[in-house]
Image 1 (cartoon, one colour):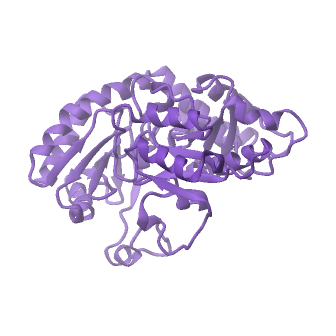
Image 2: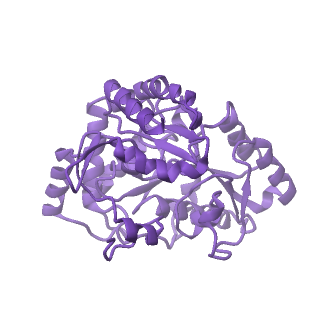
Image 3: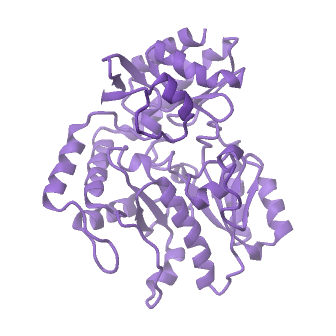
Length: 409
């Protein structure tokens, strides 16, 4: 029985009948269920456990911080020392020099924060009519009001009515679609364009060649803020020995939303990177931005993030994510030869999608993967998400491919 817990993104009738998949511990790239059975973790939890499971260094850093100061309000002029230190450390690796860092409790918070700040920025510029926020088909931007309104996955919007007026959508892979919307509605009405460098939950779609550079230039040409949603791709997942896709592709975003890999999921935390020109009206004095979260910049979470970044840097995990880019392509691309697979999308960072020929088989296939010792996830229209921890070895990638082939066959 499912008990009292209501799971996110779940058919609770099915969960109640079959019972939940209970995970009790993890170590490196593997997890164990309540019966003690071991699984390769193909998804790093949910895109986030970049450093692998069971890193006691992070747990100890959090425990030490909680023993000193668990958290304190970050409103007004107050901050914890570790939170201020983390902001400086993030600013030092930001794609745009001298960026400001606004902390949140997670990715959905970060997206709502960026959407509100985009509109408020134009208000401070004396252009309040610039309030349309643009997303893309297939896109996922979390499940708060702004993120749901921007969702390019129709089922994620069903049954809620109009959550946010002035939200628009363009084709995910066609820069001319964005240009056409701007020309049709007028650049003087559009505040910001939200863009995942890699479409994540919508099915793991890599950007077409030149697409990111083109939409970035369109935004510059028409004075539309460019918001890179790097909740998934941030902190190394994109490969190329880069902290962010925005750095690898030289996007210089006006804002960048992050979460997941910031702490590798050890505790919840998110952050919005804000370019100097967007922050300037609020740092000049006299302007209050009345926005914030009780747990934004949580001291214990900041300690986890600092320890996480230490591990990524100390163990060269940005380079390991780049190595995984090649390993995943070599090991998983041959799965496209199976009758049950129509396509394998790989070649950019530690991210791969195995697209099933019959999308209806995606959820049953998650169960079959478990039978073969793989904890996986369905995404988009019938894709299997592969996004391992950066510590997954080349041999383990081969083991993952073998287990997946047995399940898919």
